[in-house]
Length: 173
Image (cartoon, rainbow, N blue to C red; front, side):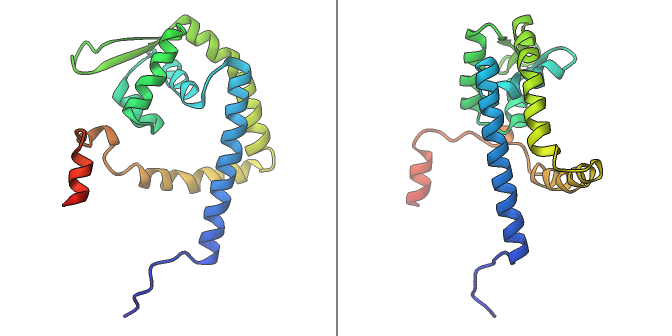
């Protein structure tokens, strides 16, 4: 038996590093465009885009946190900034008093419309321009099962919240 830790072969390692680099470069360019065009962070843009695509313009905060893969506290902070700017409103959920519903405002829809053309231009130019249509279909076909595999675990919102001091106690035992 070998006690060697598991490792990635050179092809896997190369694919991993390429994916991370592409993601980092694209995210940086997108964040820069969103800041310049609409004074939005990437997460704020994701929230507005998800709300803008929803038939009612609303989502529960928990669902948004799971969808954008962001912490509950971080999302609450970002939604608070959007609310202060008049781009969303937050109200207690009608069907669950422990939950909060976020709804995009007309000003939020206007901001989304303001940044969207530049966003599409950046993503199209950096990610899709060097690929053929068939390459894009192949890329989507490769990424979808990976994403589905990663999301197959229960969402983070389903995990119990840790109380303050619990992590410290767990590490000591």
